[in-house]
Length: 191
Ligand code: HEM
Image: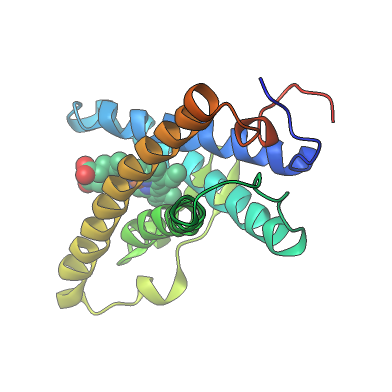
């Protein structure tokens, strides 16, 4: 693997792979619990919520780090469209990493449900509802829930597209261009 002398920081690499595993795992979990009915779905749905909030917190940390520390430069010789596409996919990834869990959290916060039966992270830490959504008028509870549910599903579809584009781009750089792009984010390499 071609390794750039300028790599992402260790914390950026750690967060990238942790978020990738949790986000893709949570998509798999959603596919799984969609096949279940009744009480059998409760535990996987609770785990999905906990993993989702974890992704939200890690993604906010990743965004703060990204704004504080500039990423290493892309190798010279990349076409303008490649630089533009890379930027667009990365920005949309932040939209998904933050918007997908936020819409999920919003969906379950609507109405009095979470006030009566509070949510916990991994059955350990109490996690609040988004307060303004708990007082939505009764007649608005169903349509508001549906709205956030549709947004959550749509962001999930955007995540599929981004993951495919991101992996195809990595494979192109690694196998066809044979440049240093992938080496900048690869784990287990000495800095
Ligand atoms: C990494 C974060 C997350 C990912 C990747 C993710 C992904 C998904 C996907 C792909 C679905 C299936 C959508 C469909 O059937 O079209 C789903 C459903 C669901 N998600 Fe998430 N989600 C995340 C975070 C959250 C969070 C934080 C919550 C709540 C706190 C949540 C609550 C739900 C619920 C309740 C459903 C079932 C919706 C239904 O079909 O009734 N999700 N999620």
